[in-house]
Length: 93
Image (cartoon, rainbow, N blue to C red; front, side):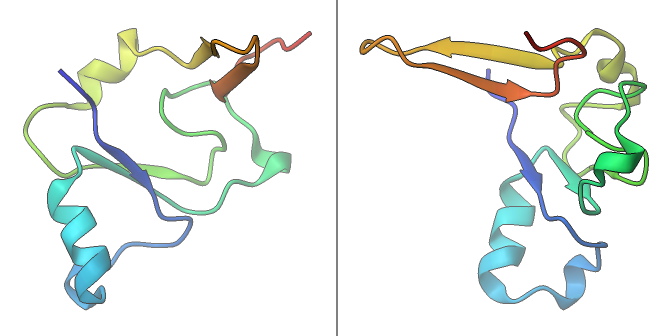
């Protein structure tokens, strides 16, 4: 089971989206709206990086309760040894 998350970096008015963006909205489970603002970096809620961002639950697969146990960061180890971080870890050494 995959989570389809999109981050738009702007406010949401999905009915005004161009067709391609509207299609992405229709496929998403959640959409994070608002730009990431370093000065407002936050660990209070999963799936957002700064306090100004909002999570919109587009499908019925996820709800606000799912944020409580959500993974906030992931590390991917590639076959060539490259490590790629995704998410927002609280401590990054």
